[in-house]
Length: 207
Image (cartoon, helix red, strand yellow):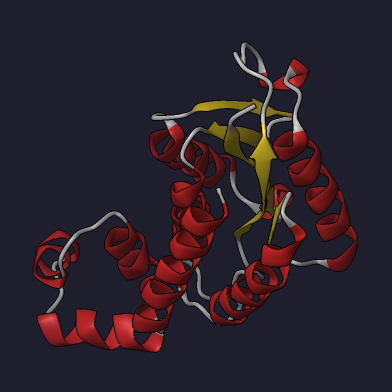
């Protein structure tokens, strides 16, 4: 069976969002996930099936930054996405996610259940245990960065994750280049970029 990725997530503090903000966030998540097979359930939870596991972490971080930047009130207790990434075999074809089978689905679901108990926002695992320690380190590092990310920093990181240049972001957000650079630096974008590359290298070596 092929090695694919399954993401399981939900919106953190969804009950504290206004109806307008929640609708805006769900729309943003739909835009991020439209290239993949995904389903929303219980309103604020979702699952995604990706055939290219090397892209899974970038998609997860796009979802998280979309949630953080959706709330413009800096005093809000913290909108975010709790998300798990399971990488493993998948029984194809996948017709509906609710009935899909394979190690990737099992891993993602198991990780997500554990995260709900611990409060962790990002967790990853692959069926090859030798790689899981490295994935855990990457996830912990990213969680430490995202725990301190502000709304304005998330706006910049979201666009950087989409592949936009700092000059393009300057035009989009209508801020000076130095301001965009400061936000990117404060959000530790250089470290996020390296972590994404480490993740992709690990996955490519493991599948």
